[in-house]
Image (cartoon, rainbow over all chains, first blue to last red; front, top):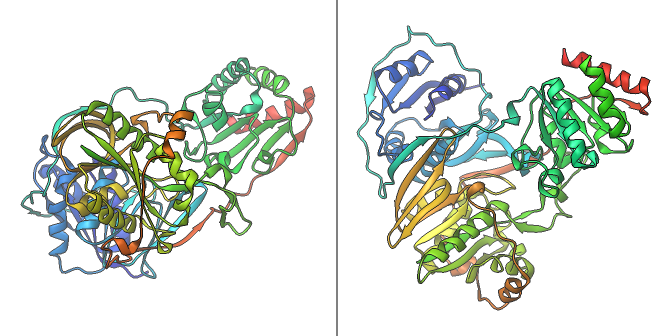
Length: 314
Length: 257
């Protein structure tokens, strides 16, 4: 695979920078990192493999990171590198930055990229239709801009022998700056099913709210988080929306997924197919869920759940 | 204040089927208003309740689905005063940079103080249109807006929920904001508002009505295909007597180790 001459990288969240630089090292001959911060942040970018660092200055509490777009665009557009790619972290802030840069640099933008191919032009894949499909897009502009999903590239180990000087870049005032009046940490981390190792999913076949209690007991015994199908969250409203698995809901990646009374429409299954091993209990042997399972049992939920609790308690 | 709320018609995802070759079959999926955009419309309606002398124009660009009277009535029943749609055969499968460019031309024609978009659409979920639109118009613009704190002539204060922090931002109007799905719970239209929607004015524009000389194709959509499935064990026990449940429990126990 031939490499691009230069990859520009940026992440507002420090922990995402190593993997974005790793992507830059894999795809480009040079990796030019934009850094907002101190000498330590510059050194950190070099240690993870950046070959050039452009420093945009210290963090400024009144400025929002998105307002550096004009500054970044000026550096990129005055560079002699052509056919380049800019990679950013796939979060809300970097997505805003990416779109602004896209207009300023007349560059194609793709968000939440899960795969990059530069063999035949610059192509990127990302999830579409809530996970039902993967869309592939080809970027035709001389500069391509992407926000990269986490986990696509493995972060490189820091090597403090890699050092260098940063080029200081003067701030370019945006036409319509946005003033930050206040900034505070987000309160109360809620459940993150997408990171759970074990998940039990509950569907309409659970029958009653009392049975939900039994499913919850089972989930405690096996150390699983409880999730649900769309009807349980939206029609019955027995569980919060943030626990609903599937299209436009949560995408799971657990080691074990146990589906209780879920019929297995593709709209639910796309959220569960990332599971390593899938178990299911359903009374209808023709339910589509059984096409997707590793282990299934055709049976009455009222019998199977209590029996499972007894068997696994022991 | 003149507010524009943008929306896109997307296929109902519950009715999308997947063909054996991995392509999506959306022929049975009726077009509906993108759920994120319902929040944008609702934000506009709530703002109107706070501001004297405020009007809301709903706006969309796209292909022939936008000619559907039911879909037009649907958006108007949710509170906008009027509707502007830009329809052209060429606009069937627009990518975000093209949508933003066309919306820019339409918004310049109608005029605006504030444009409200959803953070993304449930089909391609590109999350770019509002931001690119604001940037093309050369006005203040931001995404992930989770609350409107205050609106007064020339100034908007909003809260923005990011992955690990919350920002309170002041935007000078005119501006474009993209709102996140948690900003509100869209109201379900009543029979009265549905009936009233039929009487609201609709302006239909074509590409020729707007100055759209050069929309470069910065990005092209190559394919949209369902991902390949992992192979599974497919061991299904038929029956729920004691022994069969024990067998199933044993598989589960092994996996739990």
